[in-house]
Amino acid sequence: QVHMEESGGGSGRLGGSLRLSCTISRHTYTHYCLGWFRQAPGKEREGVAIIENDGDISVADSVKGRFIISQDRMKNMLYLQMNSLKSEDTATYYCAAHFREEGPCYSDDALEKGERFFYTWGQGTQVTVSS
Image 1: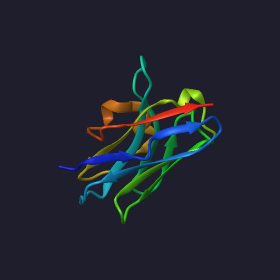
Image 2: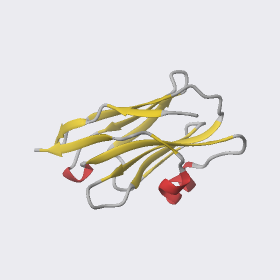
Image 3: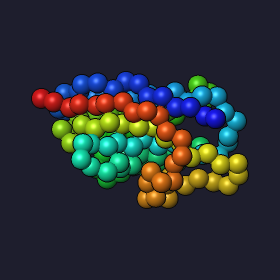
Image 4: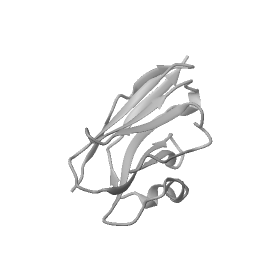
């Protein structure tokens, strides 16, 4: 069973930057989508950014141009670079994965389907943005 664990959360200033990391336990899957989700108090969990195994990316409109998702396949790491932070970015952030034995995983499809498409999750890390 694959495990995922987020790190790098904390407090960030308005207009500032934070970088989240997600450590993924060793696996042999070659087809997958990895993603970042977030959930603010009283709101549903929403997709932030998704990356395919081949590097194609889909990003939510709310963070487009500000957040960058990336992966290091050799290290089994997933990252979220968060720039130009806004107060509405305050949330618990989760990394998640959809692994498959064969066939592609499309990032735009995964982002549209949202959390129900992903079945491996980290426990979350809190991000709080303040002035």
